[in-house]
Every structure is written in C-alpha cells, then in structure tokens.
Amino acid sequence: MLPIPQILIDNSFIFSIILGSIFLLGLLRAFYWKYTRLMLNAPFQYRYASQYLRQDNAFTERVSWIAFLILILNFSLLLIFNKSYYSFFGSYFSIFLSIASFYLLKYLILNFLGKMLFAEEISRLTVFYSFLSDKALGIIITPFILILFFFAFNINHIILSIILFFSVCFLVFKLYWIWQVGTNSFGLSSVYIFLYLCILEIYPFVFITKGFFY
Image 1: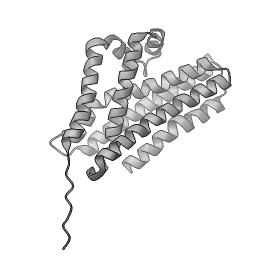
Image 2 (image 1 turned 60 degrees about the vertical axis):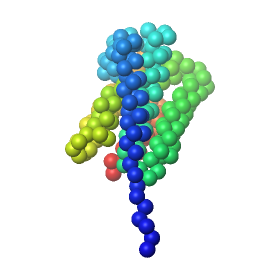
Image 3 (image 1 turned 60 degrees about the horizontal axis):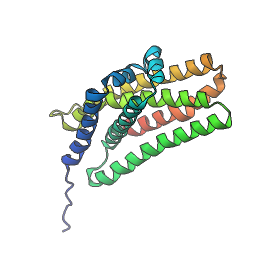
Image 4 (image 1 turned 30 degrees about the vertical axis):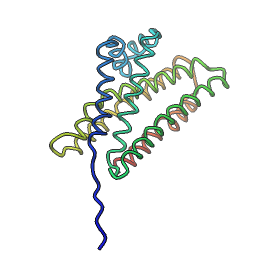
C-alpha cells in the first residue's frame, strides 16, 4: 500500500510576499504620498495624468518603480491563487518572471515602434498611460489579495468578483485615454490604435481572465 503524499500549505511564504507589498505601500504613504495620490487619480482624470507626467523627476521615478514592484508581487499572487501548493514556490516565481517579461516586452515593442516610425513622443505617452493604469490597479488590489488568502470565511468568489470589477474599470479607462490621446492629440488612424489595443491591451487581459476565472 503506497503512502498518500500530503500537500503542506506554507502560509508564511504567502504572508511574506503580502507583507512586502504592504511595506512598499508604507514607503509610498510615508515619503511619496503626494506623487502616489496623483498616480492613483491619474487613470481616471486627464488633469491628474497630465500633472503627474509633467512632474517627471526622481521622486516620480521612485514611485513608479515601487508601484511596478507592487504590481508584479500582487498580480503574481493573484494568478497563483488557484495553483496547487505542492508546486507553489516554483509556480510563483515562474509567473513573477512571466509578468515582468511581458511588461518588458511591451516596453521594448512600443519603443521600437516609436523609433522606427519617428513617433517617440507617442510611444512615450502610450507606455505612460498603459503602465500607469496597471500600477494603480496593483496598489488598489493589495487589501483584497490579503483577504483572499487569509480571511477567516470563504468569500473568495466575492473578492475575485471585486478584483475583476476593478480590473475592468481600469482597463476601460486606460483604453479610453489611449484612444483619446492617439486620435485627438496626434491624429493617429483609428485602425492603428484599435490594432494596438486589441493586441497588447485587450487580448492579454481576456486571455488571463479566461484562464483564471474559467
């Protein structure tokens, strides 16, 4: 009779990742709240986005990098939620690297297109609005990630629905602002903007959402 292997759940690793996100949030709140507040409002109101973009300095760079790290930490935990804990550690770091690679690839593609088409300013603004919205979302979902893993009652369906709702809202506003800036500020063809949004914004979101929720 073969022994039945036990799968042990090590919550200490999960808690350390969430604690790292909370620590980074504490840094933003303690030292860079002015710029963090601008970043959180920017995906929804153009004047905040414009103000945040104009204040391009060392402080906004730090806020951007800290927020980006929070984004990767939280998104990795969210995507690993339904995985078997037997391979949790390897899966988490694989997803972490995959998310980081995706954003790096998107950044390189946009910069390459900007240089090739002599539209570096358009490329810079596209990167700004696309990454800005995702970083703000990564910060917003931090408490929901904590509840998802450590709440005493099983309300996972409700929390996942809330996260999905916020994700859709941020995606809609991101698509709207990229479309507005592309068409109104630079006079780009609607066809090109639509192709970009479908390939690098909508399709990855639909693919991940379908694989996670369904």
